[in-house]
Length: 169
Image (tube, rainbow, N blue to C red; front, top):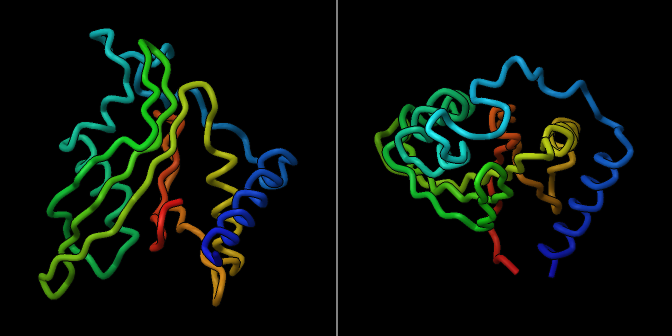
């Protein structure tokens, strides 16, 4: 019950920050996009499929996530699960779970859940910034836990965060 209450509070706050523009910055520069503007790769395939490719994700996570965890020195394996699967020809709205098996400094394996929420037409930057603001200002302490924001990708209009332990409802 407490986990449900925490989720309700978190999403209420995220909605507030998103709708009010409280922590809004300029949107990602369109020039930084490496893929073409209609969300397709050069061969006509939807670009979101990159996030379902283990090698692509492994390279991305070694660059973006591994440096954020000083207790790990490498990533051994990634298991990818689509939770929300709305992928069309050139648009998408997905939630992806990545079970990341890290190798820690003692050369033991540890697994963490990393999630991605992405939408081709709605940048997730405001949500990422709101969660980052909450995280950096001590909102995730004691009895209340929120997901740890990790990074935002303008290429996919996606943000990545560490999942919480608990039961999915």
